[in-house]
Length: 111
Length: 114
Image 1: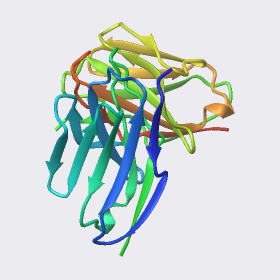
Image 2: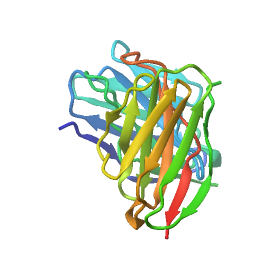
Image 3: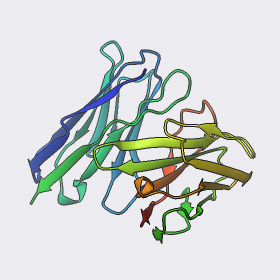
């Protein structure tokens, strides 16, 4: 079956540093690659997404890069702030329209 | 902005009770989903629906059923609640089948079965 992994599972950075979370997937025909942020007591919310015809997308301090050949995509957060502390999920969409959520990465930004 | 509203933030029920969790979305989305979220297990799909009166089993449907009588409303039913169904339940919606659009989540219902 499909497999989605995230690394690292936990990440702790100093405020102002960068954070990178990597998501690997198994379905080579996956075509939609979102990242969600879940704050305490809330549901996951989309923060950035990328489609398979694009290699990189940036939105202010957040960027996503996609390597379809290697079957992974990464979330990059620059100039981290305490409010970036949350759990982050990747959720690639398979070729038959099923969404598989990764296990999550807990990011802590230390002031 | 899409709004997905779950009827209760916290719910406490007893073993054997029939439990209803309600979810409403306001953006005319075709797809709706129910997940449960447990520590160490991530988000697991229980049921989903691509249209009114349509439902499909997800990865862990046992012990649950769903109802979608109107496009905007998707209900999760625990027929006879058990303690192992204590969990956070998340409802989500998305635009349409094969649309490559994100899912929009409610803030969850934390259900405790005593």
